[in-house]
Length: 426
Image (cartoon, rainbow, N blue to C red; front, side, top):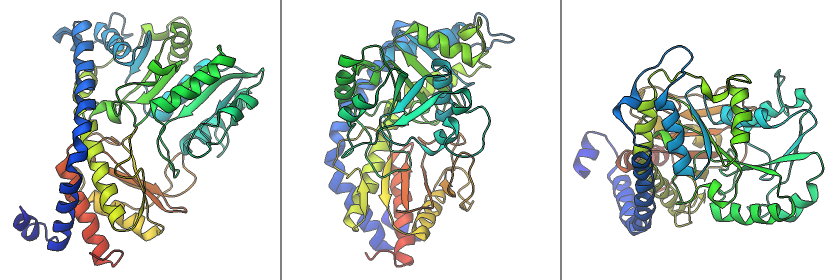
């Protein structure tokens, strides 16, 4: 294998040796991950069995989508997996930002207030809210008020949240994953503590969790620890590099799902319409593979973290920290390093490995973004990818990897580039 990598791929032997040694040294850390993978795989299989998933559920429907039994069964499967009472799982939801925006627009009315209790939300949400840009139809345009409470030591500042809640507050939002910030993902146990305290005083407040990048990383999902509504994308963990597009919204409240589905289609039609265009098979198949693929992504993130820690870089989380999402943050402190990291990842993507990514003004972001993502499904963040905004402290956000071996060779390529450019010394 070393000879193959040395001759066909032209990697320096000392880089190959370094990455192989890193992989060997963290192998024991992968054992606990298998337990989570097996539990979540059985959870998926049990939902398929309980709902009597059938070949006929993959049939096409046309027109309005009345009687799309596969679509209806898919949403019941999601209810079983997330321990929810109702769900919207649709290919019409284009991404995680769309799912969050849809939920907020479906629940909030003029004069209502919502508070992000995990600090400033992800960059693309700022335009949805109306905090940046000059977009039309923002929440602010409709008289919906926004507030935030920053985290303290990477924890929800519960006391501050309780102080900020007022008579206009209708919804609290929790973003689990870091977005383009320098923090660790919030675990379900941390969310549970916060929800319990808040609900003791304000039992009727709606608590929404942005679950992007977090599904199947732990054995529990946010509905199980008290969240009222959970949203996410099918282009990330749950798609497993198979699902073509889509998003999901799950809740214990059928009333909330009805309000959101009326926003998705129209009042009176709600979730009763919406043709699936034959996408149900891909969504269900992605869900089947998701527990294993998520495990591969976590293993890959651990390897990247461990290697860069050994080279003196700051990583979030550390390789041996407990994880609640698939994202690995590496602080490079140099714009050129971020660019070279992403380009080196792109060279070992499955698709468009010959393409050179450049920073660009990506829609929804205030800073130039560089993104490496040569994937079977365009924008599928569960596949090998890396990106980051060109701003201080110049973090790169590595995620995904459908299999560990692809991530390993991509890491070798990154370090080969870094060593050649004298960013590191091995």
